[in-house]
Amino acid sequence: MTIELQNITKLYGEQKALDQVSLSINKGEITGLLGPNGAGKSTMMKIISCFLPPSSGEAKVYGFNVMDDPLKVKAKIGYLPEHNPLYPEMYVREYLHYVAGIYKMKDNIEERINEVVKLTGLQIEQNKKIGALSKGYRQRVGLAQSLIHDPEILILDEPTTGLDPNQLVEIRELIKSIGKEKTVLLSTHIMQEVEAICDRVVIINKGKIVADDETSKLSKLLGNTETIKIELDKSVKLADLKRISGVSNAIQINELSYEIIASGDQDIRKALFQWAVKSDIQILSMNKKDSNLEHVFQQLTKA
Ligand code: ADP
Ligand code: MG
Image (cartoon, rainbow, N blue to C red):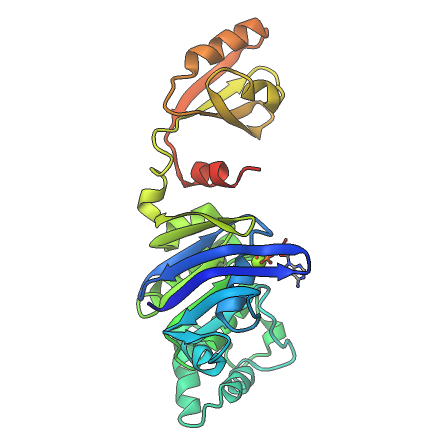
C-alpha cells in the first residue's frame, strides 16, 4: 500500500481537526480528497508529508512510519502545499536548484531540472523571476518543485484554487498527465474537479471520512435520491420548502430557482404542487435532475 492511515486523530489544542481517520491509497490512482473548508484536508496532507505529527494513530508511506522514518517518507513524496509558498525574488531555475539542494540531490541536477521544466510546460518561463509569472505558471513551478526528486507519490493541496478558468483546465490536464506515472492525492472543495480528474473520491467532513468510492460510483451512493429543480414566481424560505412532506433538503440556486432533494425515492412533485397552491405560489417550471456528485457532496456534508 502506498499510503496507509490508521485511526489518525489530530488535535489543535482542544479542537479535533482529524477524528480517527483510516485510509489506504492504492498505487497509481488519482484520489481526490473532497471537503468543505475546515474539513481537515490540509491537516491530513501535512501528516502524510511529515510536516505535522499526528496526535494519535499511525501513518505509513510505503511501509515507513511518518514519525520514525521521515526522511524515507519524504523521499517518496512530492508535496505542493496550499497557497504554494514560493519565493517571488528567485528565478525559476534558481528555485528548482534550491529545492534540489533541500533533497540533497547531487547528480545530474541540471538534467533533472530540464526534465521537470519540460514536464510542467515551463520552458518559456524558466528564466524569469517567480514573482513575474502568472498564477497558473507559479502553480506549474510548484508542481515542478514537487517532482524534482522524482517521487512516487504526489500530494497536492488545492492545486487549482485561485486559477482562472483557462489556467484551471491546463493545470488539471497537467495533473492528469503526470498522474499516469504517479500516485496522486489531491485536495479540493470543488466537486467538478474530482469528476474531471480523479479515479476515486474520499469525502471528508469535520475531520471524518464520510464517503470513499470510485468517482463514477459515488453519485449512485445515495441510492435513488431524486432532485427536482423548480422555478417560482416569488422567492420563498428554504425552511418552508424543507417542511414539505417527502423533502429532505432544499438549495437556493438563484432568486427564484431552487433544487429540492427528496428523501428516498419518493416522487415529491405532487406534494410540491399542493404546497404551491396552498401558499399562493406559482410554479413556473419543474424538472427532474439526476443525482450527481454535487448533490452527494451536499448531502454528505450538510450540517
Ligand atoms: P481544510 O484544509 O480542509 O480546509 P484544515 O486541515 O486546514 O482544513 O483545518 C481543519 C481544522 O483545524 C479547521 O477547523 C482549522 O481551523 C483547524 N486548524 C488548522 N490548522 C490549525 C492550527 N495550526 N492551529 C489551530 N487550528 C488549526
Ligand atoms: Mg486546506
